[in-house]
Length: 616
Ligand code: ADP
Image 1: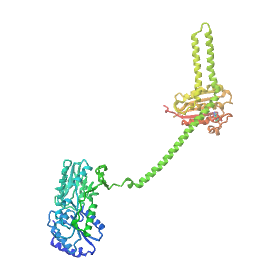
Image 2: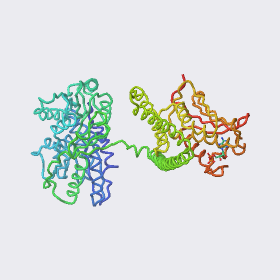
Image 3: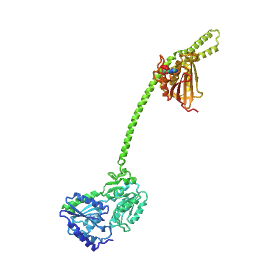
Image 4: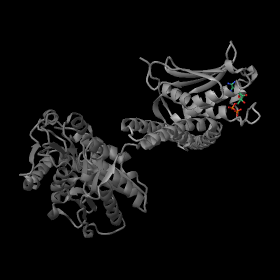
């Protein structure tokens, strides 16, 4: 236990006489800041610093502020108090301070106890002390008090509000007289909440044991940091270290009510604001320095300020912002993504923007193209329709011939039936046979008309699954009469297996029709016996291939490509549109149409389309 010896006092007195307040300039006002536990002891050191700043800010006079600490405040003894009071009296004997500001309850108690012996008439400002620690009866007319309120119940209620599952609260506190006072008060104030939460005060443990306990608290626990000056083992603790050690090992959130702890690792809540206390203390001190009587200045106790929380601790313990009491302030928010990655975000946003512009341009372009494609398809379909009309015109003679046959047969059969009916004993069986023939011929005529109709139908482009063999068979059948009329030997070789393709049957028929009529035209000047057209349909890997070959003069090699151009014709009454339309149709089916000359003479046109299903 430190004791201040007489020798030490003598040395201090010597120091005081050479470097003490006696050297102050006349207009300087001397303020003595008397600390409770030492100039570096939190939270009082922060309050003292705040008061010092505010004094310098508010005072119209230059100030000299000196610091002294009541070291005896930590111990349960008054033995060192007397020499310390002697020391102060000696130190400031020549130039007593204009005002003494005591920070914290122990310093206040010290000045009150030693008022007479110290500076009997020097005004004192007792600040940063809880209102329940003020000994009002001992106050003199030269004492002003800046009391603060510590509301333990509010501290506990705050814990239960932000962490409603809390069942157990442990309070870290030391055993010095000052700390014992608070332990008793906490117990009293927490009593009404006994059924809601279990309270343990660790004031009978060494700090090392407190750390052990704090590291193995059961779930739903919280810790209140009251302070740690002297632990149960008698070890004196100083500075921020004890709190830091607790923070490092605690497995539960820590709460406190003094402002300096906010930002050090407490969750937060209502607290004694340094600013409120410092401003009021400085204001009162300046009034006293200006001549006001200290005892006449009455200041109501300063309550807790609006709650303040540490965002990082809230995240750590899963406390949503919505759980905080109304009017709470949240500090220490992490930098937002924007603050952290400003350039990266800006870059990405620019790239996305550029991409967006590019994509929208491409989409617009695609829309424009698909519109153009639809328009082109419509035009091609219209053109194809017109072309079918002109083909149909060419086929008129054939169609007439095809119709004439069944109609003639019908007439003959009807006449025969009339003769039989007019005979004496008509043979009904024979009449029935004749009627069946008439029906068959009528159907044949109807089919011719239906085929013509379907060829001339103005139908929209429509893909269906069909067999290319059927298209060849139908078209050849359709043109057989024309072939007879034009003396052409028309043969077809279809694949024994089906050739499934996805196609528009009318349009594909038109292609075949065009190729065959062109071949007939090409051979019109040849001797009748030689005129021959071979149509074949076969598989070639994944394709169905159709070819129309003739034995005509062929196409001059340099014109092989030109024949597919619109309006290319070598015929006096030709339109030059047939092959161009045929190629458009084939390409609309995803296929190819090309022409070659056969080595043996004559032209051959190929149509290649993708098979709808792969060959087995
Ligand atoms: P058009 O029949 O009205 O002339 P097309 O586009 O059907 O129009 O044919 C264009 C030209 O291609 C024909 O005029 C002809 O010169 C040539 N051509 C087409 N098919 C054959 C073929 N099988 N043999 C020789 N020339 C052909």
